[in-house]
Image (tube, rainbow, N blue to C red; front, side, top):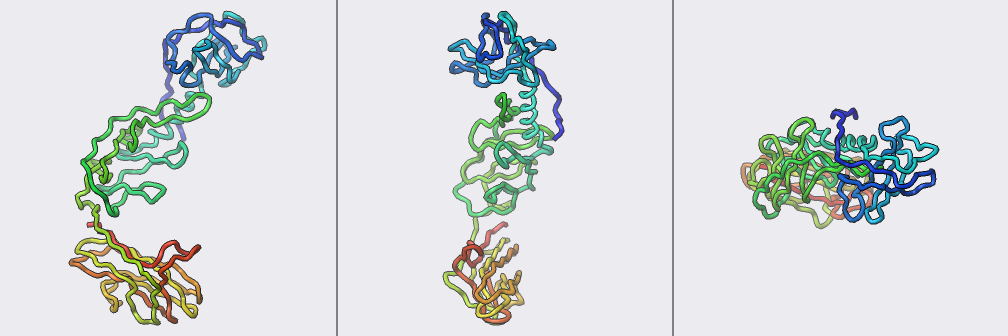
Amino acid sequence: MALTFPARSYAGAASAGTLAAAISSGSTTFASSTTLTGWVDITGGTFSGRCVIAFGYGTAAEEKILCTYSTSTGNFTIITRGYDGTTSPAGGWPVGTTFNLVWSANEAAEANAAVQNTVAQITSSGDLLYGTGSRTMTRLPIGSTGQALVSNGSTPYWSSIVGTQGAQGATGAQGATGAQGAQGAQGGGSGSVPFTTNGQLWYGTGSGTANLLGIGSTGQVLTVSGGVPAWATSTGGGGVTSNYAESYISGNVTLPLTSYTGITSVSLTAGTWLITARALVGGGASTNNVDIFIGPNSANPASNYATTSAGPIASGAYQTVSLTKVVVLASTTTVYLNGYATTAAGIAKYTAISGISSTTTGITAVQIA
């Protein structure tokens, strides 16, 4: 990914150190004979992260050393000599040599990587970033007005369909604007997103900019308000309701030859419903084809909402077949899952079969308006 942010430098007030004893090729530590002032914060006796020290700073002989510092001993512990593309001099560094705390190319690369993998992915107002693995993120564009953010078990997506909801609380306040991702640890690592509390979301406010949104209250849904995501209490409109129905068979159902029969059914009130039917069907005594239907009548195929077929299915074998249909009901209606076989009597099975299906035969419905 090409860099889209300008290179940056920073000026600090860290004083230079003076080498207390010479450094040779076999040295593992070094110390300063002068007091170090204005350096980065030190907690617990050590730097919070590794640091990079430069000897011969700004000269052709400059060497950078990756190390850590301990206030308890006053020593720098050497991790890597000739760091960041520099070279260790054959004669080492003599006592009295000046050294400086410096910013390294590796740190710059980590900072750029943090920006590129987070806020730089934002292209439009309302964009969301979500994790796709360890330290990786991807962009999810804003959904349509009234849609809710739901999960398929691995990734989030915008949808007008939400299943049964629990008790709903007050609208959660939007979190404060987030700062740019912090610098990763030196010598390896990655930048981090500036989350401060559990459940926060990062969403785009324009190209290359983002805000933090605090977690909403229990039972709230993530919807769209003014072109950006916001937590809100469900009112039953906008495609989000709590009406849900399902029915699964409790024993095998015979599907007669060319005879239309009801397998199971649900009773639905007036409104718009997303109806899904799934059947685990078998061929019966011989190779067979099986048709299934969703409809308001268990004996009149002409009034079906949707139909599909499975087969040919060998004797003793099974296949899964499913149907999904959005239906507008003017009044309370019993909706059936129906079926019949076209060659010989078939079977709608009520128990799952390992390797073929983890679910059984039944019908579910979610009210969406």
